[in-house]
Image (tube, rainbow, N blue to C red; front, top):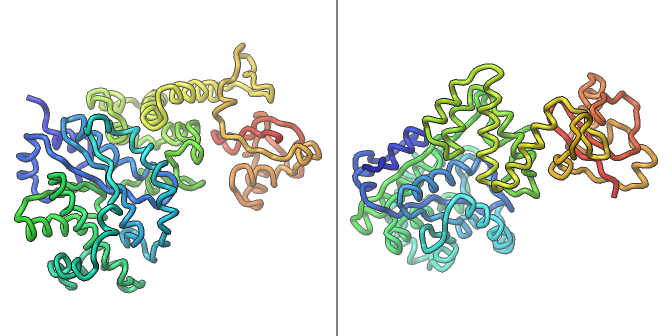
Length: 415
């Protein structure tokens, strides 16, 4: 008998809280429709969104129909969850511009052919609601006391929760009701910060349709050191290759902290759990192998097999101790240095480069640091040009490879 997808999710570490485990397990004995919502508030999703994508993918692999709900309507309001201040409100034009790019990223995780998965936009129904009818038919099921007891609102009341944000729970609950009515959707998944909002949807379905629906939420992940998942000192790790290159994306995963490797292999790859546990048992220098598998598999899903192969070989060459010259050849390698095309480029005007650029300015601009921080790291011997440490007051006047610390590279290019 095939494994119930709930057991798969629990074994891999996705299940943080569920509204009715016994009822959901029984429902999953037959194919169901379920959904997860994603806000189109940026031109790209980031690593922090991957938990939602992976949950949908596991449901699809088990024969269920996932719905990726693009929040084109709710984004006009702004989710108060996880923020201490009001989110900036995007215009319809900004949201519309983001949607096509975001939809392509979701398609890396789900198969939308022949209706095997659906991608919907809640603007299609939320923007058509009549306000008076909505208050009368939906708002009457919500009490202010109950809404204020939700963690998503409690943390915002003192810092300033506006009335528009206060309506967000009603809109998300209505989404669930609409999907229940139109598509037979009986399960919503999301992060643990959405628990109250999703429960409100199950309650609305019960009151309006006398139907049964379920909630399954995942933990809001942090790394072993407490850093928010998908964040680095340079900012978010984006899924769009124009914002975070495949090479940078691969490096994010291969630099996973030792304590997180097995957990991330279970969550962010589709490897069988026997293989995940086998890799998780590696220790010391051998753990590098597990990190490489994690980086390759995660990059393959987001950017495709070809790019994942390319950046893996580039990373191996780079960190095999070879010196790289501006010609693009790896000293002693006897072969072309493939990474030249995947390491992020930093372009400067040819005239400025030929005149010579002070290293503290060049490294600060190329790596997004402050001039002060660049001076400090250069003074400590932590910045390199062509794998040679640069010195304070040095200037650079030719193309080549810049390195900040041990593993962060830029290819200096004149334009």
